[in-house]
Structure formats: structure tokens, C-alpha cells
Image (cartoon, rainbow, N blue to C red; front, side, top):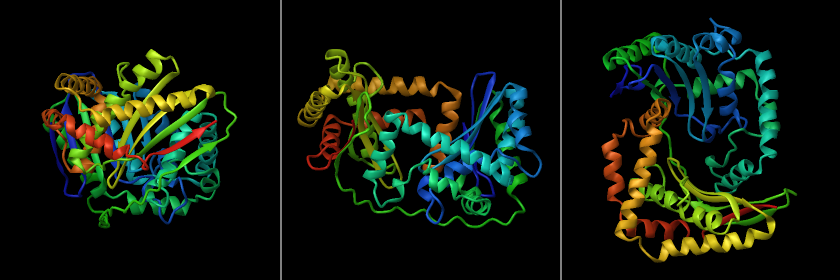
Length: 409
């Protein structure tokens, strides 16, 4: 793998992979948390409307450009990123990469297309209301991070999206889409030197000679989270519940690694995770239960979520409290810790075997740390976590009086 920085400030990373398929992405350090001074949901709305035309290509041409090659073009928005990515046959990598750069630097956002896309986004917002498992997480995060930039809803609200106009979209892109806040990543079965030349060539073509504003430093914002316990009558068939607390940030490396391992032990995707083993496999109370951990640059969130029959809610909560207490009060044995490490490393290896996952992960790593974390470094970090670290992390995150809870009934 090779990575570096172009004269424009754009970071890049390229990796050779034995596949007929190539993956490329442009990641921009700009998300929902960066919407101060704009209407809520503008980052996500911009992501949707970037594909609606450039000065050289219409929306119809963009939408069919990679389809005709058998490829795919997509994008997504998070609290801290907007990511554009493409998948094509390796011989078409240059075409896909050029299209991504054109969209990211030359989108014109036609008025008519903006109005059409508002209806699409508002429909997406409405669909979340019919999916309590998705909606409850967004609302929980909004409440947990109240009065903090991380509290914003990624989709915004129907009212805020309706107010977004062409001039506001253009201003947002001018302010945020700066090469020094961008990363270009590629995973393909091609010579890494040639892929690096492609990255530098595209950076020069689309950025050199243009006036570039200096990206202001990104500031961390103090978080003063106040625990809450709230129930909302949604008249759903099931009760949906989410509970959790603030967690280590992206830059708290020891805390972050311990939190990743803790979340996987408690409620990871495997059937032997503690909460899944008790709530689903042993007692049959839930279809699924999850413990998720998401780190941000100045905070993080760890949350346990599940859905169950209303009459089983209290029993589920008691069982969850019991499992949390177990991990807080008794350190894992050395064999159990070895097994937990190996399980997580296996999951990461299987996930990382996908070229698209590699490509997107490389972009995230570049934006966060200015480099791509090697697999061996990840392994060393995991093996540096002790049983006491996991126990202390559980005590900190799930401390009495610190846990918040939201229930949809």
C-alpha cells in the first residue's frame, strides 16, 4: 500500500488487491456536525444532489455513466463525513475516479433537481418514522448529545430540508469541500505506482490553479451530557429500547480499543455475545440485541438496543443490567480474553477481505489520523488491552447515574 499527500493538500492511499473489481472513493471531512449556520440536514442533502449535474454532464449522464460499464456509483453521509464511492471493473478505474472528482468539484445543483430531490429526502425522513428500530437510535443520540454539534439528525427534518436553497448548497460546498479535508482511496489489482500517479494526476487536474481557501482547524467541543430516562408512546406492536452513555473518542486510543472489544463481547454480531446468548438464545425474549460503539473526534457513544414484546421489557432490562454488572465486577479470565481478541480479529479480517470495505476504511483512517493503520498495528493494539481495561471501561461507560434510556412503546 502507498499513501501520501498531493500538493493541493488532498490525501490519498492506494492498495493492490487480487480482484477483477476496482474500488475508489473520495471522503470529505464534513458531516452533520458541521452544519452550524446552515439548515439541518444540508450535508445529507448535498450528498444526494451532488449527482444532479456538473457543468459538463447532466444528471441523466452521471446516473448512467458507470451503469453502462456494469459499475456502481454511490454515496453516504455520517456525522463527520460525506463519502462518494464507485465500483467498476479494474480497466475502468480511471473513468470512475475522474467522475468522482468531477462530481466533488464541479456540481452545479440545478434548481429543478433540488426541488425534486427534496421530495425524495422528505420521503426518506418519513420512512424512518415507520422503522422504530432506526428512528429510536437517531432520537437517542440527539438527546444524549443535546446542545452539541453531534446532536443534529443526519437527515434533518422535513421543515429544515424544505428551506434549503441553491445558494445555501453552493456556499456549503465552497466552505467544506476543500482538498485539505479530502482523501482519495483506491483498492484495485493494478500497479500501486500507477494508481498513485492517477491520484496525483487527478488532484492536479481538478485542484491545481484554482484558488484554495485554507481549511480552518477543526475544534473539539466540550460535551455536557445529562442522563435521561424517557418513554414515548408510539403505539407500536413491539417495545423498542435503547440505553447507553457517552464513550471514548476517536483519539482516545487506549479507551477506544477497549470500548471496541467491550461492545463486541457484550452485543457483537456473533451468537455467543453475552446479551445475545442470554436474551435470545437462552430465554427467547428478543429477535436480536446489539451493543454498538461509535467514536467521534471529541466523544463517542456506546448503546445497547433491542426490541421485544411489551410484557417482556422489564425482564430484558434486568437481564441486561445483570450482564453489565458481571463484566464490571469480574475481570475476564485469560482464556476468555484470548478468545474475545481472536473473535474480533477474525471478524475484522473477514470484513476487511471486501475491497469496498478496505477502500472506505482507508479514507476514514486518512481523514482521522493522516495515515492508514496497518493490520499488524491493529493486532498489537488489541493484544495490548487487558481484562482490567475492559472491566474499567464497562465501569466508566455504564456507571450508575450515567446511563440514559429511551423506550418506544
